[in-house]
Length: 114
Length: 112
Image 1: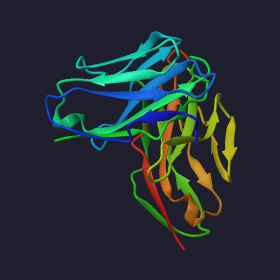
Image 2: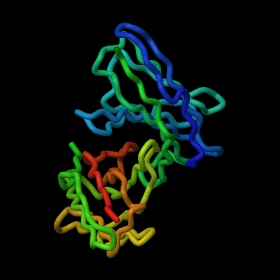
Image 3: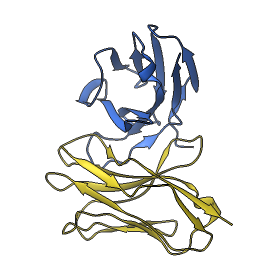
């Protein structure tokens, strides 16, 4: 158990809908990362927050957005969902924001868009 | 941009066999290198890391050496067990960036 929790574990929804994925980082970690794992694209970095502020952005679509709240939990919002958004979404957390801080991964949320 | 290339899988071995999973990278600057492991139904776990050239990361019998001259970070284990069956990801994190860049993953199956 990494100490990072993600809810829900599974999500099935229809095209065009909007969903929210939630992540609680390890106690004491200030940085939260979101990754998408799909069969065709592999594991890709989406976005990072550090202590409530956006720190880095990767291949995140405009239909997706995220935020980190004062209690440090984070939410990833996915809207106007398409079939191709079906994937495993991982959250990771670390103490700091630099490259050498170990990232601890949650168990993921499996999103299925039908 | 930065990228990581891993050997194609799946890889199937017998218990106690020697394991090598190749990983090469392309990056500007001096990245940190990582191996992560993903067991079925779970998130990724850091297996080992190396932060500079010639560093050797090791954990649970696995080893990998940061080779700058060949831009490689191959994962090795002398004697694999059935419990090592998982997907292994090589990754890098550039000093100036916050994110991890992953290879495509290698599925490893160990038969008793």
